[in-house]
Figure 1 (tube, protein in one colour):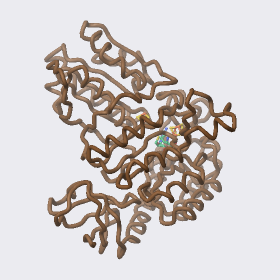
Figure 2 (figure 1 turned 120 degrees about the horizontal axis):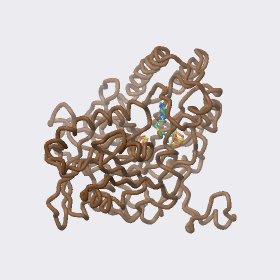
Figure 3 (figure 1 turned 180 degrees about the vertical axis):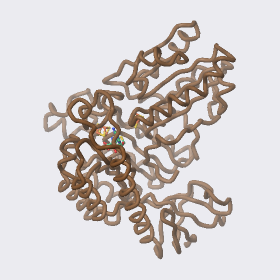
Figure 4 (figure 1 turned 30 degrees about the horizontal axis):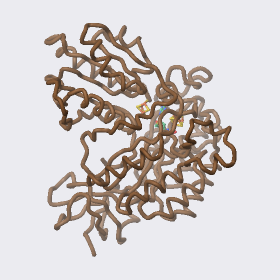
Length: 477
Ligand code: SAH
Ligand code: SF4
Ligand code: F3S
C-alpha cells in the first residue's frame, strides 16, 4: 500500500482468513472488495456481522458457501470489473447451486432489484446501510428466495459494530467517522449510493481508536467523503438550526481530531477526504498542534478551471483552492499534499485543461489520482450536460497530466533526500526481507535496512537516495 488514501477501484482484494467465529456454523464466506477505503472499511463491518453468525472466511471462492462482492459505482469501469468478476462465479454455481452469490455496496444500491433481473446468478442484493440485515437475507436466500434490502438510512453508522480487521498488517487501520454525502457534485454517484451525510458518535470513534492502540496498531485513518463536514450535535440536530451554545458543545472535525490524537502520542492519526470548500483553518491548526496528527492532506481539486468547478458544483473556485493551499503552507509548512483530478468533464476546452495543467505546475502535488470523466446515471451532469469531450481527447489530456504528475512526484520525493524522516514501520519492503518499509508523516514510502527494528516501531531514517516515489536511507538515532 503506497498511500493510505487512494481510490482502489483497480484493485481486487480477496480478503483473508481472519474470521474466528465463536460458534462456528461450518459455513465459509468469500468476500471481495472494490472501490474506496470506506467500502473496505464496510467489508470489515460485514465480516464482523457474519463472524457473529458463525461464518469463517476463505480466500478461495471455489470452496465458499457464500460469495460476496462489495462493489463500487464511481466510474463505469469499476462496474464492468464487477460484472466480469461475476462471470467467474458461474461455474461454481453450476457445480453447486446451493452456493449463494451476493452483491453489496454502491452498485447494489444503484441498481437495486435490476441486479436480480440482469444477473440471474445473483441471489442477494444489499445496500451499504442494510448490513445488519445480512443474516436474515442469507436465511431467505437459503430458502430459495431472492433477497434484497437497499433501504438507505439517515441514522445508521454501525457505531456499535467492532470491525474485523481484514488483510491487516496490524499497524494501520481505518475508522469510519461518518457515512453518506450531502454535496451533490454534479459528476458524482456517491450521494445516490450512500445516502445522506451523518456523523458517528465521537466516543465510539475514540473507543475504537483506543482499542486498536491497545492491540498494537499505531496508525488510524479517519474516513468520510467530506471529513471537514463532520459534526456531532448529540440529538441529531441539524447544523443550520443550532443555537450558539449548541454550536459550542457540538463536536467538530477539529475537536474530533484532537480527541483521537490524545488517545496516545504514539498513535498516528490520518484522515480522508478533506473538501476544499469546508476545510477551515481550525482543522489545520489542530494538525499543527499535535505531533501525531500527520502533516498530510488529501485535498481533491478535480479541475484547475473555475468554469469547470462551477459546472461540477464543487462550491469553490481556482482562487479559493489556491488560498486553501496557501493556508496549509502557512499553518503546516512542508505538509504533504495529494489530490484527485478529472479530465474531460462536460464541455471542457483546451483552455480549461491548460488551467488544470498550470495549477498542477504551480502547486506540485506530492501525489495525484487522475481519472477521465465517466458519466454516471442520475447525476446532475447526466441530466443537465452533454458528455461531449471525445474519448480520445479525454485520454490524451489524462496522459498529459499523468506525465506531468510523474515528474512532479519525482521532484517532490527528491526534496526528501539528505533529511531525517520519522518513519512508522509497516513491514518488509516489497523487494527484500532484509529491508523494512514505512511512511513518513507526509505519506511518502521510506525503505531502509532491517537492523533489529520491527513492524510498529518508530525510527528516524536519514534518507540518502530515492526513486520517483520511494525514499531510501538508514536508521539514525
Ligand atoms: N468525496 C471525495 C471523493 C470521492 S470519489 C471528494 O469529494 O473529493 C473519488 C474521486 O473519484 C473523486 O475525487 C473524483 O476525482 C473521482 N470521480 C468521481 N466521480 C467520477 C466520475 N463520474 N468520473 C470520473 N471520476 C470520478
Ligand atoms: Fe462525490 Fe462530491 Fe460527495 Fe465527494 S463530495 S463524494 S465528489 S458528491
Ligand atoms: Fe465507489 Fe461507493 Fe466508494 S461508489 S468510491 S465504493 S462510496
